[in-house]
Image 1 (cartoon, rainbow, N blue to C red):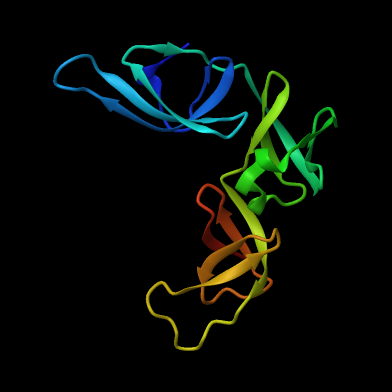
Image 2 (image 1 turned 135 degrees about the horizontal axis):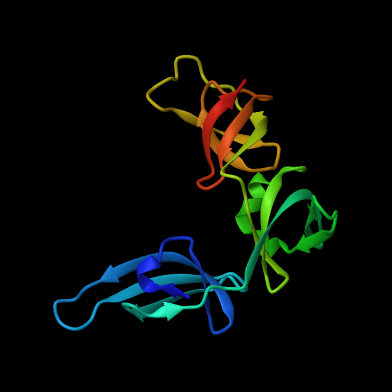
Length: 186
């Protein structure tokens, strides 16, 4: 069981038999009455977001959640396919369950697949991935005002903002949590 004072962003809890992740939370101590915790929860099964208020000290269930290290293989019209590197068992996850994370999925990438009661619910990417630039306009000479950026398309199809000196073929380290450029890899 998880107490409300242990709530933090990204924590996974179970309500009414369904797994949720905490998107936002706020401890509130009004001048009159008992303290409470206001939360915004995202369903891992449906993606719906709901607001829920808990009294301070309430306890919620920890979901029956399993995380497996798996390798991304490929995607097709049925979804994204991953392989357990220990047993070579393959599973498919729908595009809806992957969401925007597909922007940073590269073949052979090791990810954490989240399973709830044996059913895949989504994935967790490593914090940083290295992707090559496949399309980028050349930066204009002399256009180096502080922090100038330009769009660049990565090998996965994602388009991010990069500094002007980045060229096609460069390998970049990308932060998957924010989808931002970190550095050029040599």
